[in-house]
Image (cartoon, rainbow, N blue to C red; front, side, top):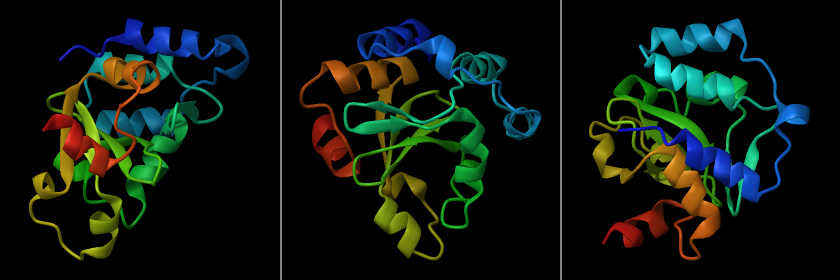
Length: 160
């Protein structure tokens, strides 16, 4: 799946986001984390391109600061999902992680309440709602589509 970088740029443009004042270099430790996960070079370049000082709010959802992606994914309550090809890249309105499936490159949500409460989740597909959208499409639609899902519960309804 394509990352649809142009749609991500368009979403930032709609927000009147200032690239120059907010851009920040991705740290070597973050790059090393991405490389250890065997992320594609296209995805690493995407993260380098869209690395900012703070998380970015798109409507009611957030795209993480790229340099915090490693920290977010290694937190105790989250640290099993990246091992199963789901990388947290943002959060929904209620705290549900927005995740990128690093194999299919599609974005979706994880039910945070189940993720954080259950000791051992064998099948992440039970708590993962795949919206089958690229990163660019996902964040673009989040500010251009009125009924776009802002958490995993909305995402369940959205794909029905």
